[in-house]
Length: 82
Image 1: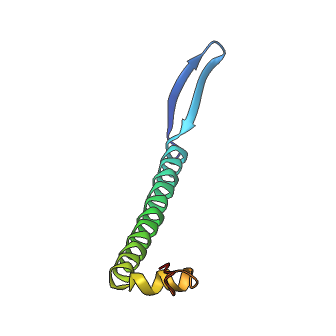
Image 2: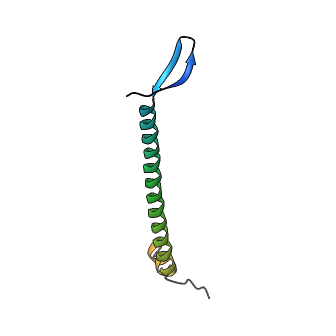
Image 3: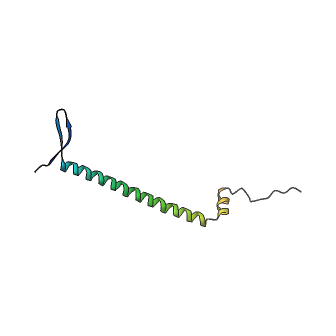
């Protein structure tokens, strides 16, 4: 048994859509939105975990050792003039 619903009235007659087709289309659209939202939440969670790890690493880092490794020629000697 097919159920039809009138969607719009035109000068040539009625445009009809099947209720089942409309329902499937809406369901697919909702599923797509749910999947997109789930992927976005996972990406945000991963970014948060990465940021937390980076923050902890920076807090525990020896700044002077990092500076010496980046520019080993600086700070090793002192020039004096008498």
